[in-house]
Image 1: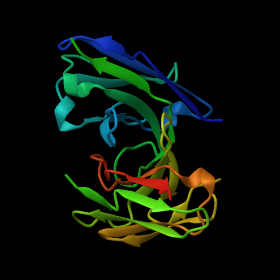
Image 2: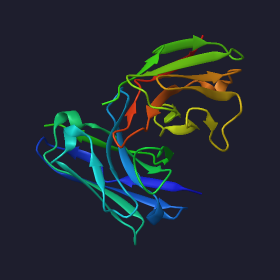
Image 3: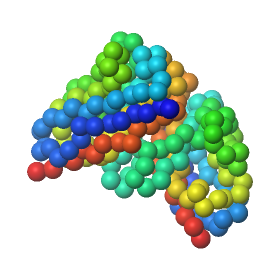
Length: 123
Length: 107
C-alpha cells in the first residue's frame, strides 16, 4: 500500500523557517518524481514545488522561489521542503504527493497524496 | 501560467442524480487533465487522468471527457459518498495548476 506521511508543520513567526518531511513507503520511491501542494484555509489547491526522481531537477511556483528548497533522500524514501523567510500568506496545509512518472510536468499527474501537515505563519 | 476555471462553484444535487462539472483551460492542454475528489480534512484523491482514464479502484459512475480547452467530469448516479469538492488539474507542463473547485452538496 502506498503511503505518504507528511510532518514538520507548526506555528512560526513571519520571517521564520520550517522544514517539512514526507516519508514514503509502499512503492519504489527513487523512481518517481514527488511534489508539494498546499491549501490555504478554506481555499483551493496550489502547486508549490516538485523534484524529479533523480533529484537533479527541481521546480517552484514563483511565490516561493528563493525562499523554499525542495530535496529528497532516496536512501530514506523521504521528501523535504525547507521553508525560509516565511510569510503570513504561506499559511496552509502542505500535502506531499507522488507523481505518476520519474519526471515532472507533461504527462505526470499526482496519483497518491499524503494527509498533509499544517503550517501557520503568525505573530 | 495556464488558468483553469471550473463551473459551477457549488452544485446541489440528490442521491441518484446525474451531475456534470465543467473545467476550462485558458489555452490548449491536449488531454493532460486530471480530476480529484477531496473531502473535508482529507487529502485529494485521484479519480480521472488523461481527461478520460479512470484510476484503478474508482467506481465506473465517474467519467471524464474533453480535450483542448474544455473538459467535463460526470457522475452518472450520485451516491452518498460522492458529496465532496472536486478539482480539475492541468499537467501539460511542470507548472501544474488547479481549478478553484466545485463543491457538490446534498439538495
